[in-house]
Image 1 (cartoon, rainbow, N blue to C red):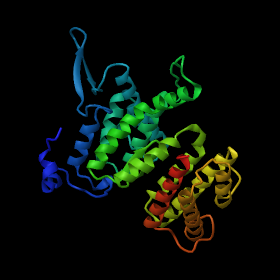
Image 2: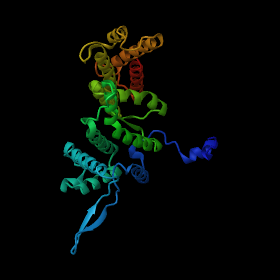
Image 3: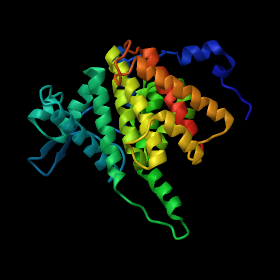
Image 4: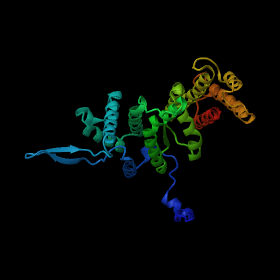
Length: 339
């Protein structure tokens, strides 16, 4: 079909219709923008306006409730996600007890009230922690579940299908959340490992997503944990956090190569593991890839010496150093898994 939208023919119109907010934090959003984000995501949460219904005969009983979307058992799962994420938030951070109503009255209605209040009024760190808890509850629903194995299916095919099925619901949620976050210029991107700094769309789609999806397999649990810690340190936006980020990223690369070569973490430096992995044909060894590995290994070694906390550092890392190392590590891992 050759018909073009007005915005496709007129760059000024496209800019007006879809403004570029750049990269901004949650705290810079207006209440109106947060409300719009809620409306685009409420299918996963609930209608923020509490409803009233009457049950029984005279005298009837007035019942207040929040409407969850979808049919049973889908809406029941959504209720559990809200309730459990709020419960865990309070349990983990007792001194703050962000869910004030829930602290007094541990009901679903209180959990819904607090969930929306936190979404609209709390600091970015609290909101993203709540989203993270919600995501963990969602992921856990299928984490240990199994599906029927087809007769003609090989074990590998079945395991791949099972892995995709276990992540299916979360992947739908994060796809929709990331689309909304991108439209509003929010500088975070939700992955199977948690929130990461948002990059250009091409980098996210072609590098970050394939790599982080690959590492979501239980085999790479230790690597994922270290990388997740790296992203957490990066988001602290402090010199110490950036230096910790660099340290964790390089440790994640080292752990990845140790598992590739030895089947477990514990032994081997990056500079020695790369040639061994190539010799065993566990990672690519063509000339183009070899040059990438050589350059990246020297950069990792230099950054480890200069800005990480693994050695006496010459200086703290900054945001630019940390983002560079994160992106280079993703490129490195991408080339490794292309084997």
